[in-house]
Image (tube, rainbow, N blue to C red):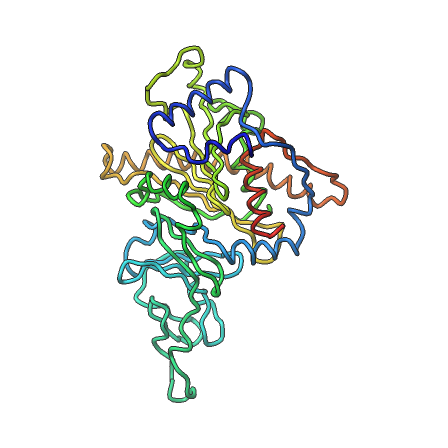
Length: 397
């Protein structure tokens, strides 16, 4: 990454943003793109090996924070979501004091699934098996027919808590009861400052959906860091509007930010844009390690998060969120606001199901072949190199 080291601490001043735009235009003129120092060779086992998948669950997701929700999804006390993390089934719930907590979704009596709904609001969690109940802070509230059960301490049977923190509008969880969480430290000063500048705590999730696919999580993450496939995999959708194989990348170590140009920027190829605002001509993408892609559009954000299956390396989960300003912070009435983001959501779904997922499912099927041969990651696939490099670091490789 020696060709990018000098950009690690670029600020978001107008001058710095204009400099990045001019680099994009220079790449368009010259048919170039930011690049890694060298190609890398990849084995199909990186996407199929059960032992490696177990190490990823333990050494990545069990140790570092990853995004599980936007805070608006559990805006009020008692609101919760449930999800499958790589190591645990999890409940994330808003507390009475406004903080968030995460718990393993299992009753401490006989291990029954405590909450089966994907989201909701409650005063307490009640086990469907024997009706033991827990306050939303995880403390054991009621043991049914306790006088016949035997002596025990309620405090010893609180729900198992996982480290959780809310920062920059997102809820983060480290998927191990033995772990700790410090999101600012994990992000580092560069990405922490970038996310703070977006004020995403003022926005709202329009819609969120979780997709289980027969695809390794790293294949899915790679696809949404890839500016090399747009023209070929999306010829009638994104390929019509976004340039292929052109990007300017800032490498922040665990994370990165890169911009790719819309074709509407072509009007400025022979004419310096000077100090004009250029956001509408660009898509700004962030890799937020270990497993998220955040896309900054000119009027909203899209968050894509990828997680491994708890046992099978050939399965994975993708969460998709559209995060716009609240309707009251725009000039749209509620109906127009809903219509706008419903249309946006439908477009994303069509592309995802018709173009991205079929290619990724086919790729995972191909990875099952014993003799795939050595595969290769090109120097031009810079964001993918950063993702792979940081994943290997977390694995201690």
